[in-house]
Amino acid sequence: MEYRLEHDLLGSKEVPESAYWGIHTQRALENFKVSSCKVSFELIRAIAAVKKAACLANGELNYLSREKFDAILRACEEVMDGKFSDQFPLDALQGGAGTSTHMAVNEVIANRASEILGGAKGDPAAVHPIEEVNLHQSTNDVYPTALKIAAIFALRRLSEAVSGLQGAFQEKEKEFTGIVKIGRTELVEAVPMTLGAEFGGFAEAIGRDRWRTFKCEERLRVVNLGGTAIGTGLGAPRRYIFLVAEKLRDVSGLGLSRAENLPGDTAHADPFVEVSGILKAHACNLVKIANDLRLSSLLGEIRLPELQAGSSIMPGKINPVIPEAVIQAGLKVMANDFLVTEAAGRGTFQINEFMPLLAHALLESLEILIRVNEVFSGHVRGITADFKRCEEISSGSRSLVTAFLPELGYEEAGALLKEFDAAGGKDLRKFLEGKMGRSRVEKVFSPQNLNALGYRDE
Image (tube, rainbow, N blue to C red; front, side, top):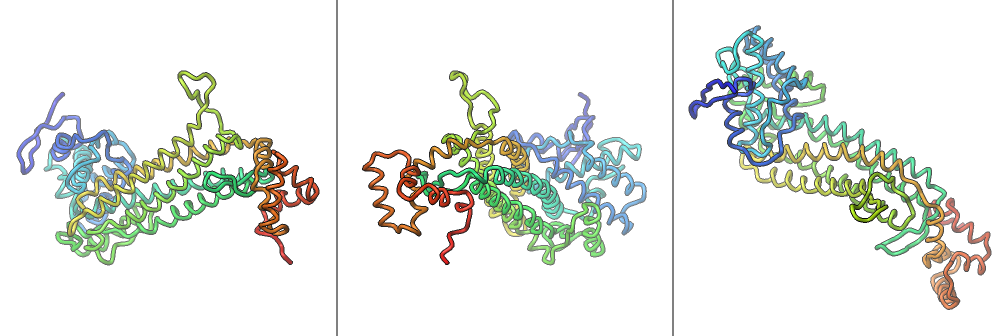
């Protein structure tokens, strides 16, 4: 491999000749060999969008020559289009509040711009990564702004995926509306309901998640771009500070606004914690629903799609693998919420040093939830109900007598159960039909009556 020699304040270092990154990224590659987690390219794409907005503002204010403006702008757009996705191999767990990731984007854009102008990679005289690509910017305003942009686009994708899952449960709610089953509390048989109502409850919970993920985009629309190092805008002209936010709105297509208090927005990462909490709430619902489906499958009330052999030793064994995967995905998102919370809380004074971990955890949670919702939606649509098994379990349940409390009262209903037990009965529904008449029992246990809200007392 051929190398070029680059220089910085620490000295000289060889950089692969074919690489678009520079010496700062090379040092980071050598320093941060921590995990197998790589920086999300969606974050890289968003940083490039911020760079494009800054280039447009600096160009309009005549801080860049026309030639360099055109070259930097084109390089930004190429990074945004994913043409250099292999040029950002950095470990996501890095010190420096995201400076290494930020500098990687500066260097790739600068080297590509130099190439466009006919120069060589690594030649700061052609296009300088700091003095021109990073002109009037700091990691501390670029990085959190870019993270908000990346998160907003991911939230929009997640909202669509959650909508798909809600729709899948609503389809099953209609399909199962006439199937009576026994409800359960604390893993013990409770009162009768319909399987459709149970799936309707799932749909309602996911519907709340859909609304929350759609609305929480608003928490991320206020950005600190223009605040430079600590939010005071030091080193940037006032005209640029006001203009760059407008340019970023145009570049991103998002309804972004500059923070009223730039130092406060630079120092605190609480909007990310709020969004992560909403993702955790959705993860909780996914875990709970997936586990309910596993248990319903165990009881035989529903049949989950059979997807793969479940054992290397037990022939014919089929496991509920998708619900299990959903549960694990939910637990991972819950764990990531802890990391987002801890990272945000451990910032000091005017900076958040642990923004790289926060960014990785938040964007990972979004990607996991997008994918797991898509997988889960298809699985739910393949669920079928076992009407006979639901009927068998519900007909034999002692809890059925609860439906007659408005007519019989607690004591008389209890006496009926004692009589049923003394007779050694196994089918309480048939026993009740013998006592109160079949038509009366069928009316009480009809899906229409069970789905009604309470009973009419007039």
